[in-house]
Image 1: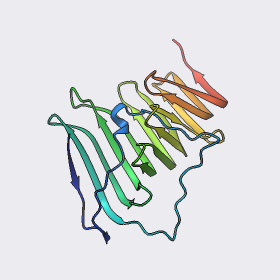
Image 2: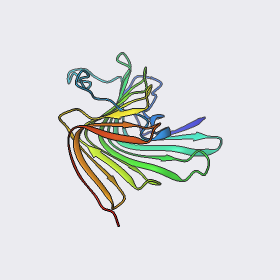
Image 3: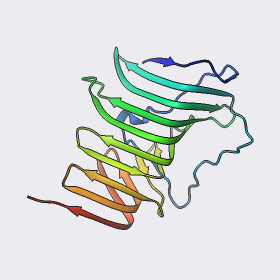
Image 4: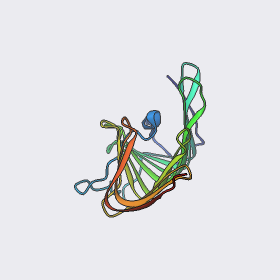
Length: 195
């Protein structure tokens, strides 16, 4: 796999090999989890990142085809903590076979954990699965790479839409990307239109 980066001058300049955040969208919704027992990563506002990029861009290429692209206003790498914090991000996952876009998304903030591949989305995130005409959006979602699941916190609402026929709004969101299924564990409401 070849990766190309388009990175302007770093604001801080400590040489660090920065692994960006998303192999995860290789299945695009391959798993997130913010459960009752898991606290979102808290950043110490006094801690300085090892390197900061403005207008950050990343492209992953496999077998000559672009399979993932991401652009962000800002990316900050904290080497000792093994995290990359990305702000105002837009991303696109493409099919490994055809190269066509299969999913797109936006996130206000994403924290990528280099050791596990997990990603915490905070403030706002929307993920659109193009071939299913489905979208998921919420304030906080967590992707768990090992289990390929995505979870929302029990108290945070998530909106799930599939085409024009299905609309759900609820808390305690859970999605299993391998099974291509999602559910809500707390307070769900919605509409299903059938012709």
